[in-house]
Image (tube, rainbow, N blue to C red):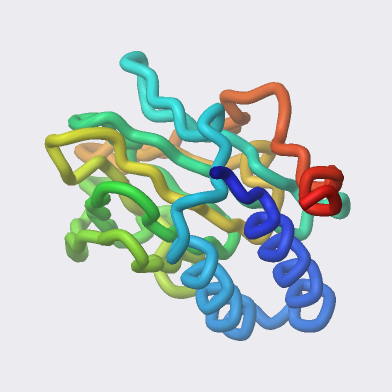
Length: 201
């Protein structure tokens, strides 16, 4: 049984956190990670419509955006072999894996320098684990489904309405940046506020 209350509780926690510490990125990452770990410890709340893969490409589904666009919550879904381009975020972010396993290939921020991007490391993120990104701690990477058996699903939290942020993809050989706005693959978001089923229980 899907229990959307977990997502509602998480949204409320993040709203309180951004109201109290929104300008303090280290605090947002530290306490936000704690909240996200608690959310992804349970795989009984994400509506199936927001966990659907596509053979065309990975999918990015908006689950919630703060009315003032101070943070957003997004589910990402990859089939085996699917990956993002090399990209940045320009804001802080948390990536919590809930199903499957993801690989993160990191690169040094090219800044204004021309030339090939410099790889800085590779790591895997397993169910229940959370990864961090931001321009301050490392912001340029590729994420892919590291498994062979089925979709990988992760829950991302960003310090903005990430689907509307002007960001960049990068060419690995030249370092050339190309601006993009990712948008989302869904036209509706989960209904967090209908408590009728809970009230009737």
